[in-house]
Length: 128
Image 1 (spheres, helix red, strand yellow):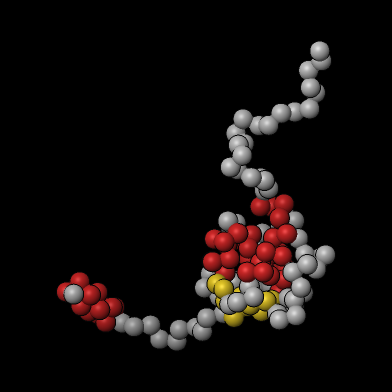
Image 2 (cartoon, helix red, strand yellow; image 1 turned 120 degrees about the horizontal axis):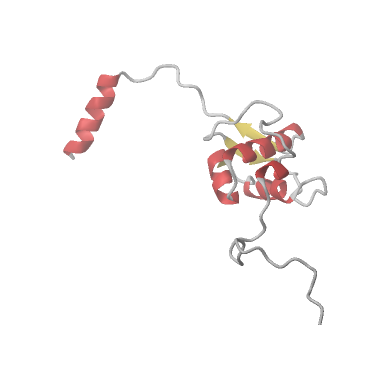
């Protein structure tokens, strides 16, 4: 009997691993989003008329659109998709460029509290 010429499963891959795709494959080799970078705490919201079944959308884009039907931070999207934040930023840049999502950055802090105030707050919390 002849041996099966098809390669068997890799020793390092088991049933729990699921599909293995390199991050650069998901982003087409890009490491930066098309526009500006997104803050980790920026909220992403998909448009009301965005269809996640759009044939242009890759599976990761579809999942981002599905998750962003409510305001969700960039960091939470990365955690939910189990992808690096950099990859999620590139994918969000694609969606933003097509007008499928809106990104709401947190307001910039004009004045930071003085160190003495922060130390007093920490001391007060420790006293509790």
